[in-house]
Image 1 (spheres, rainbow, N blue to C red):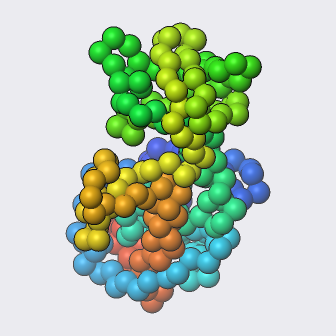
Image 2 (cartoon, one colour; image 1 turned 180 degrees about the vertical axis):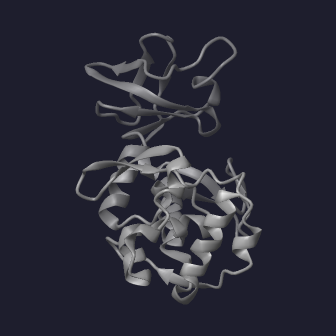
Length: 236
């Protein structure tokens, strides 16, 4: 149906649930596509993705054609497959990959970045016999993200390259670090103040993932017409 059309899209790598890596077309760089003629014939409904349902599975369920999974990305605010809803196992793996093992927090932002020097990404951090590597530097939150080692409050940590050193005031697991602060009206900010409560990385990503569960889809009775119109737009 649309296989020839998609040969003009860039390619990206996509990992299937089996672990197999396949090359697919990146349909999502569509800023130059004039979609008005497509949108004029689209009638939408909504679908709630269930755990384990990949885009091709949903397309087959709705349209009887797994190749039509690209239409979900055409009509939703998703730029790539990695924004698709993640089941719990996939979500937990995402959390482990995205965030450091530990956040080591200081009482002063100058302990993280100062006018004379700063912690460096990738440098070895040590205290006594413990060593790890710095993978994130966040002076806004007075902290560095570290992988490796075992860390405790009151440890004095030192960077082997930067020479930066501070006494750890608190240690958090990576996903328990503060992503932002929010008040009762939903306003966000990066620093703590009265009326604002912390939102962790885990909570933020979990909420975003749950929002991604409900997607807009083209009604099955209109799908063939929409695809035909899309092909016309892309061919012009």
